[in-house]
Length: 409
Ligand code: PMP
Image (cartoon, rainbow, N blue to C red; front, side):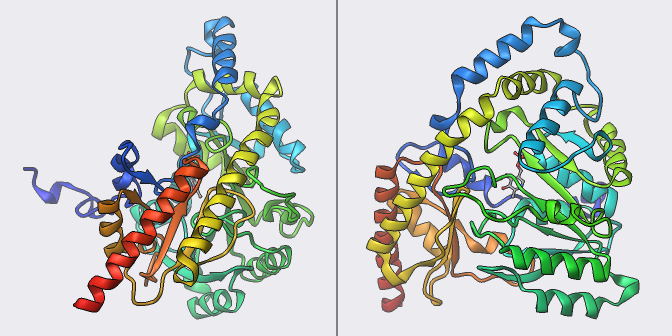
């Protein structure tokens, strides 16, 4: 047993990921998995990835087997600049850093921005690994209310005004498009108003965008990053993160940061001490894959499959749970977020669900501060429509048993 005093303060009692703790259940075929936030293995373009990998390996080995530049393999940097351009965003070399997934992008930003005690604002609810990352560098993480339309700007203003100029929050972290966990998309007006408030208080916005390409209908709102780019006074206010994990394969570990060159350069220095460089091997394969046009050729299929699964989950929830689970219909992404009746504790319900053979993520995990314990995130990406229906049936049965046990108690 090691002496606890050896550990840095945060790692004496670190917060472990509550979602990854449920991963063993996702490997058990008898359990229907609505936990995790994984893309579906049956949606991967396995053949395309194999071809890209072997084609990449036919090139001279110093292009894929050697260490590469910290800011990313030049060939993949060009491919990502092209991809972002086709999405409507102008990205220049100095504004781009490739990372080992967008999780690393978050970690690098936390290292570069946060001194212990600094405030970071996150949505209520938000992506738990972002909370974990910011807390690990000593940030004080503050939740701002959010709703179907986006961030509650009156609440955000109150937080910013209450902080005063000397203790101003360093940044606001958000997932504005098909968010994790809510599946919600901020309206364009909410994005514009958020940007105006950020400009008034000189608040950096970290826009995390791994899901926007997974749309079930045309997406009619620009990224906050694109809105900010339209005006020189706001262009430095947004740092944008994205990833190939949900659209290509998370095993490649490829993400990126687009932001002000002064911020991006510092993130690159932080990356030097984290991993020297991302895997040259997977970066080379990703470059070949994107250059061949396979990413954009594959996306409509992924959107169609996830759209069908989202639809299957919505109709099963409405039919089998009715008003016992209130949720918003997502227009893309991988998640349905909802609320059981107030007397239901989702954490306790999960135990009954595991007994019935299904798992979901109780909502507590997604709150940086006070939680709403009757909420839950259900991921629809990994199961066929038939399994989704069966999973919701098991959830309904677990809820019946949970509620009758409450009545008896
Ligand atoms: N941000 C959000 C909102 C996510 O949901 C995820 C993955 N679940 C990540 C970042 C990290 O993804 P990756 O590192 O695989 O790009």
